[in-house]
Image (cartoon, rainbow, N blue to C red; front, side):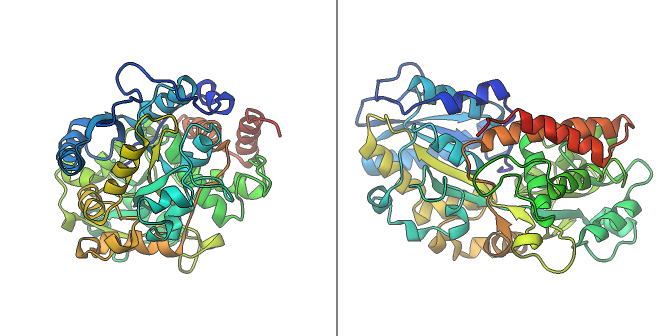
Length: 439
């Protein structure tokens, strides 16, 4: 994210994660495979920047720095979000993965359940300076509760509401919205003459999940019971999904074409003065790439029903971010641990998070003045006070796929003028729940 581009994966492929067992330590072949050379590591990085090539240009000097310090060469591959989860799942079953890889933090428990990733116990955390270096919200998305984490936080993000200052001024809106009622009112003023109030990525499954999870919290729903069973058809879950889709269906403040958006097109519309608001994580790079200067947009915390953001019903973001993991079957564990220590060290945390517009999950790095800007202060405050981790359950990846698809289909209904009712929402969510593993 980044701009984080969420993974869109198939349920059949996702099922591999639950059949997989711990990798047995076989040497992998081909590009990106774990290797037995003590002076070489393979690293799968996530697409955080405006392109894969931009990420390579950002990361390669840092990898060269690591090689100069340690003598260990890092072979880099930047993988698009659309391919990443499938690539990782294939690696967990074949044993032919990288030594070190980035993962979306919402996948931590799912990938942990394969047994393929190195557990970060007290000893392993000790090699990188200890667990207490990291902020609690980021650690909350590193694996299932009660188990040693499967990953270490690398980049932290949260959602906020970004607004187009020119469009707000032209519509006579003097105050950015902080509640859903205010979003609706502002959206109606903005939605005229071919312009629209707020953008969504209606075909982006993970983004759909992020938004309806937060709305679920605001409606008192978690989508999973305390013992980890899918609970997609509760009154709160249905209300959350309907509220999100109703931005297009009933409220008519989202362009129907947004039902097909999955690749940050809503951010492009925002930068081109076609959409007045977007809920996003850290889009500064994307805005700049579109020619939008920082004085052309503003940011406020993502909306709640009323009052100020906080925990529980006042949750206004999921804990977004990227974690870094080590494949358990690496032939260069010592080098892999050194690399994670390097990437989570203060110097790299400040440099990379500053470059990507994210917030360091390392406490000491957050103190750098680079993270005191108005926009990053909103993100930091959200992570500290009002963000919640997505359910840390093994089935989280399937949850993203089946419920994300249900929301995508409901947006398609809204775009086509078909009614979106409480009953139709519940039917889609019931269908999604039937696709989950039975417990």
